[in-house]
Length: 571
View: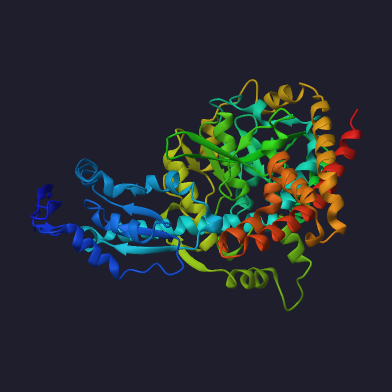
């Protein structure tokens, strides 16, 4: 393994040498500043607002790029920590304003704080001597960062589409939360008790009946899609979990009487689910936690929850990887369950099927079958529309058909299983192999796990017995918010051009100063548009913002008024 040495040059600047073998000059031995200026002169970023630099050296090219593109974000990849140390010791001024990334673990804390609203992509600059030392590392890191930004952009687009629906559902669900349980009250209450996450993969139909023998031995949490399957096999899970904000999620519950099963609903979930559910209910909220560049832990709550939680007892955070099953996994960690057992988590088209028989999806498809169109044909039509790939099968028995989305979730479970401090067992018996999990049969787990006293059902019952909470603080806050938004909503009949200076001030104060937590989600699309079009005249951008504030105030009034009316129905 070669090492790096710093030497002086005739120009008075320092240079870096890789001693090899073979020996490689990372910078000019005569004038590294001139060399960097010439090398970066032909580099263009196009529309990109970020520059990704492959290789640090002593940072002369980084300084040159910063001089040429002072408004661009600079991210520098460097595999060797010794190089970073030498650059900081020899030429710290070259690194000013640059984010240094030395491993995949550095990517989230650094890039999490980038404002994707104004981000227009990245241009990649290759510092050739550094890049050639380990092309595979730099190529892999560029790919990972590209995926991360794609994920951030996808998250932004999801917010554009669903954020207002999430807010509307939160305000509709909030009154129900006062006579329901908080998931936070359960945290730590199942320490050392096994937790079983039941998903609706095709393999579930082989195992569903056995789960009844696990009820006194482990906490059984079903995703909403799997509930009908379990109930048809005579198994009532302890908890059924739902997080989807859309109306179709209600179909997982229609026609069912789950008896002792407790509903755990995210506050953004479709409100009619909690309204109609015949059993006990807990509420939770989704929040994202990440490490900031300064090492502190940051929390990013669901839109509007930072305002709501000032007036209620916080229901408790659950992080999500994009599906109900990933949320259930984080729930298990918060509860203290160990080990965590996955059932029905196929993440593949086992037997070329999409879901286990018994889900509402299969029920609807059965109604579509004819002499010429059977259930298998319908499954194949759906699969052919997906981006198919083959992955290693459960048990290492050949390959199984999966797709791009399933593979993302498989990677999430593999990464989580590798990092968490508790064992993760895959007892699905089919589907895709999930690395870092132990593959076991449910029968062997039934033999191994003892019957618990008190059992999981009793722990849930004791928590739910704590009684309802008062809604007075929230009533007052909603009334105040209605009063604040009323003047802004009243301006809907006027054109932006006709607004007086005082009316413009009223709009801006209401949205930006009085209720920013409630207005920001409703203005996100407009703010993103304005951030990407900085060339707009200030008068035009202000007019766009003011018009959207009026529209947002009208919509917010409707959501708040519904919440207030439902609060009045409480005892």
